[in-house]
Structure formats: C-alpha cells, structure tokens
Image (cartoon, rainbow over all chains, first blue to last red; front, top):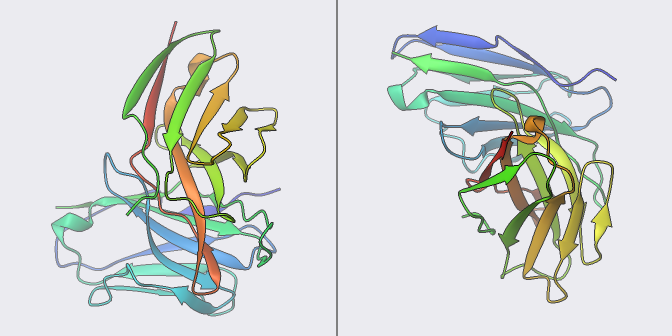
Length: 118
Length: 112
C-alpha cells in the first residue's frame, strides 16, 4: 500500500515570499490533516479535512495560511506571505473515516516538507 | 494544551526493555490513549493504542492503569533503530471528529 506522499521535501524561501506544499493521502482515506512541527516540538494541527470540507481550522493562521482539498483527494497548503517563524516541517497525514467510539482512526503521516524562511 | 505529560528523555541499553511512562490524569471515560514515534527526519508512526485493557502487538505493549490516569509503553527488546521521540496522545472528540494534541514527547536513546 502506498503511503502518504508529500512534495517538495525541502524548500528555502525569503520572508514575504509565497510557498505551496502538496499532499496525496492514502487511497480511500477521507480524512486529511496538515500539521506544523517546529524544531523541538510535537506536531501542531493546522487544519483537518473530511472529504473536501473543513472540519477544524482553529489553529490555522488564516491571514497568511490557506489550504484546499477541492476533489476530496489531494490537498495543497499555501503560505502567503511567509514569515521567519514559519520555518518548520509541514506534515500531512490521512486516516480512514469512522465516527464510532471504538473506531481505530490511526493517522498515517507523510515524510513532511521542511521549510526554511530566510 | 496537550492532555499528557511525559519525561523529556530516557536512555535504554540495547536488548533491554524500554519502559516509557505517560500521565493522562484528565482522561475521560471514552478517550483512547495512542502512542506514536518519530524517527529523525520522518513523520510520526503509529505504534499502539488502548482504552482500558492492556494491549500488545508486534511492536510494543501498552499497560494502562486501572484508574486510566497513566500508562506505560513497553518495547520488550530495544534496538538501536528504536531511538526516536515517542509521543503519548489522548484522542478526544470535538466538533464531531476525533483529534490528537501532541506534546513534546520522550526522546528515547538506545545505547549500544
């Protein structure tokens, strides 16, 4: 089974520039997550999609970050304009959708995109 | 805020059991405990999860106390490849969906 794919793996940009990350989840996974992981910290959820709808974007800095999942499959996360503090690894994860209390909901993570803002 | 507390780091000798503790004193009755690990430069990887019974799989065992306020992840025979950051997470339900909040985890170093 193919895992979660992300590209690019690395990106270096200057502050105030724009950047976009792409994620292709595991086939059949309706739930997709974007996390931000700053060095030395655990991943922080930015946005969660259920199919092509947003379930949770409470931690997304909406003045500069945007994300979409138009066809309910792959997704893009954009930062415009970037700030120095956006330097981090951006992780995409997906899981099989299930709402039952005993549901598994294991999240499968991609390798991440390491963003450096200079 | 993370719902779990873990020691920041631990060492373990290769071949010995690694016991990683986690406190989750505010856990609710239907909230599961999940463990993930993150090897350097990779995304987190699922290890195991449980509700109230002890669980075992090919990777690890999970021991949950009877009051469910703490748990221990056991790697029975640690190898150098088990060196990683281990995250203990309480999965909770909010706004009709399940959510994880990662803490800073325990950095496990397996020593040769």
